[in-house]
Image 1: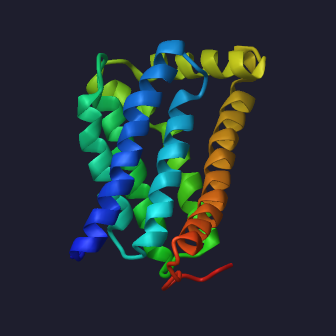
Image 2: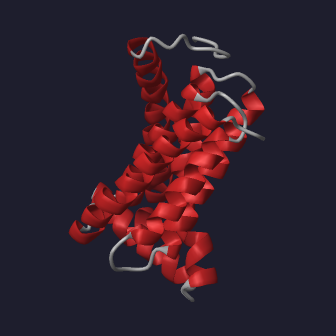
Length: 202
C-alpha cells in the first residue's frame, strides 16, 4: 500500500509516539515490576495506533505505525529489547489484520483489534520464551501461574481460573482501549477541523 507524503508524515508521528511510550514508560514499568506492564504498554501503544488509523484510514497504516515504534524501541536503555520489539510488531500485525478484515473503520472493529492485540501480550511468552530465551513451556507456564496467582490472590491449584481470568483481563483492557481510541480519535479530528472520512460512526 502506497501512502502520500502527508499520510506518511502523519503515520510517522503516531509511530514515534508509540515508540516514545515504549522507551520511557516501558523502562519505568519494567524497573518497578508493575503487574501487567506488558498489557498496559500494549494497550497504550495500540490506542495510539488505532487513533492513527482514523487519521489515515487505509490498509497498512496500523502496521506502518507499529514498524516505526518497533524501530525506535532499539534505542531503549538497558535490558533485552528483542522481546518487546516482537511484541510491538505482533500487536500491530494483529490489529492491522482485524481492521483490514472489517473494511471501513468502525467502533466494533477497533474494539476487536484492541482486544486481540492486548491478548497477544498474554500469549507471547509462550512463543518467545522457548524460541528466543531457551525457557521451556513448563517454566513459562509456572511463571505465568505464579504471577497471575499473586495478582488475583489465588493459589496454583486454581490454574484454569487464573488463566481464564488473566486472558479476560487482557481482552477487556484491549476492548476498552479500542472503544476510547475511537472516541478520542474522532474528537481530535473534530478539534483539528478535519472531517472524518471513510469511517462508520457506530
